[in-house]
Length: 251
Ligand code: PXP
Image (cartoon, rainbow, N blue to C red; front, top):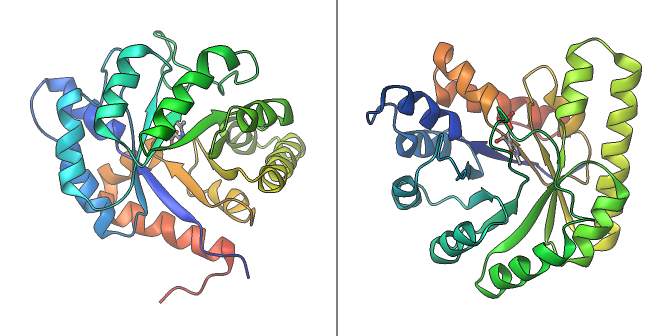
């Protein structure tokens, strides 16, 4: 039986709602505590250049609200590196960042970014963080991430989710096969394979069933569901679906 798969809860969009009014509510710190209590295994946050959701002052408060490991998504930029070196997230994840995008649109071009990224990877690892790269399920990108010393690669599930929700079953199955093959290849290389982006109750199980994957990072859907059922309930249900997909007995 495949081991239990971890759930990293991305709390960015709690901060998006807070920032819509410029006040303090809803507080991502409280979201981190609630997600922890509901069975999350990690907290993911993205400090974007435009600070549209998580802000600098949130970092230490979120750290204090949970004992869970923190996965900090970041662009490969000098000011972000300084913040990450001070904050020391358990994982620093490089994502591509475009100002006008609504969310992280595609994976990192690790293959072309080698010269720029390799130095960042080394500094963060020397400082005690594990380094992850958010990439498309593409063997070329995986190999580039491995060669740069990435400990983890998170494979982008956005395309799989879109195809699956659009009823494009054949194309979705092909994308799922790409994700599966890359997860296997990552293990062979000694890189820990994770996945995420866009996952919902409806789409999570085929991904969670890929036995090589160790963690899924899920945010927008959970925060959306939290409006209706509360964050704790949304996290518990996602956890349950992931466990079910792995055949892990739930007590
Ligand atoms: N992984 C990465 C690298 C992301 O940038 C995001 C979105 O911030 C997620 C996972 C979570 O995606 P979603 O919010 O669509 O669940």
